[in-house]
Image 1 (cartoon, helix red, strand yellow):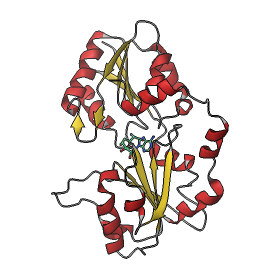
Image 2 (tube, helix red, strand yellow):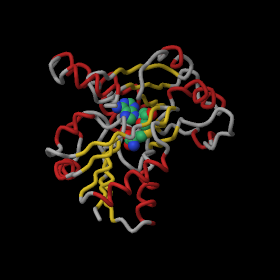
Image 3 (cartoon, helix red, strand yellow):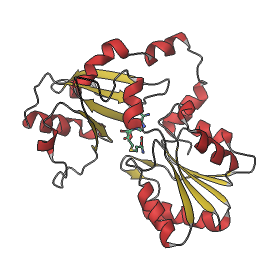
Length: 265
Ligand code: SAH
């Protein structure tokens, strides 16, 4: 029986992989990976390593979670070193807990290798610090992926303070999110940003207010996250990544960009 490494792949920029993740990827007999894990990382694997794609796209599930759990388990019966590679951090909206629980119940040993979550690193690449002295004393990371029919599980009234709010998986619900924040009393001109494909050469940042962000960010590509808070205004001084890109246009080959955006199906 093998060991499973539930491994964070980081937000996109390959260099944001941890050394530990890099080591197990090199040792892996099989890598079971997601759409959000940059496929360039797979190039670190040894010859003969098997690759299994179990990615999901918003609404379109390639494989239901129970089947993904089972694929991981079956591979652990077959191989010694099994890497389950997930975008960002495996425990931040990554369902890593469910995968670990499934393995626990079947007596398979595993390790968790945390990854750099998009929730803090994508704002950082957009020049937005999630906390800042005198501006925001805390930040929250909230799912923006709630069913339109069911009642929201988010306690909107708790979001009245000036602390930073980061919504993941929320682009399609952006209008509902901004309406709720306005309903609880946030001003119409309250700063927010939508960051698309953060930490990659395709990064796009739309800065606006609760009133105009929906219109301004129309057509923005996924994956994208939403930052709401006064910290967004600091971007004026702290923006660094996009200008570094235009200086180093040959940073990553175009073919690997395509693969990142499409997933390596
Ligand atoms: N475990 C992941 C999050 C999985 S949920 C992590 O820790 O980062 C998937 C959501 O993450 C996407 O819908 C999007 O909101 C966000 N996301 C992931 N990668 C991103 C990127 N490169 N740029 C912008 N948002 C990203």
